[in-house]
Length: 237
Image (cartoon, rainbow, N blue to C red; front, side):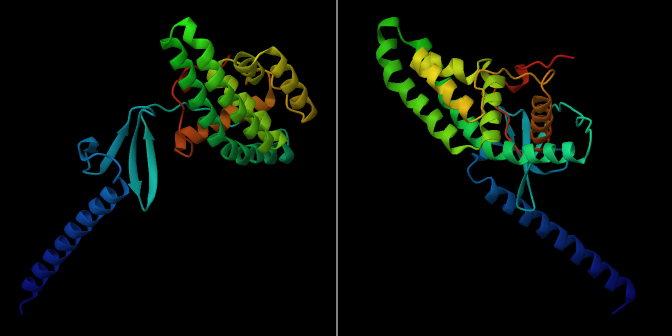
């Protein structure tokens, strides 16, 4: 066989292998995105398949078995300046705690928003009975979560709820269960070194500064899913 024929065969083999590799990649991606309706899948300019998440405002890809989130807009927040190694270690310690408590926070926020939306749809006569049934359930969910969290996780949970709702956990409990219950939950929180009345202020509170930096970083990298309205919170400059 002549040399140039060998070269042509080799080129054809390479092209064939690349074609099959691309097809296999697409199959893998389709399997990874099997829960997404076919009409929701799109291709980018490079031919890569993705799903566009309207809530996150991001493209969701699958790369080597891992989800990759490419957000339309990134909030670039530099890491806080660390005073020493202990300060730096505390920052990464908070990151572990944030990642553990975040699913609890997302569940509580979703439940709270659902109840708020439902209350806005019904008349005043029905609100009392609905609130008694549903809000008691939500408050009990908070209690269960708060009991399971460590002191640091409890603080982070309370701050996340404040960031998302503009209300402290104390105010939410008072709204759902009355002032007397909120008073006792504040006593319990104080005993556990968790102030459920304290606001979230990344400008004035150093721990909140760390949490805000970690939130933005985790959202940008796709490690945590942003909640709806997460951009509405404004940080003082």
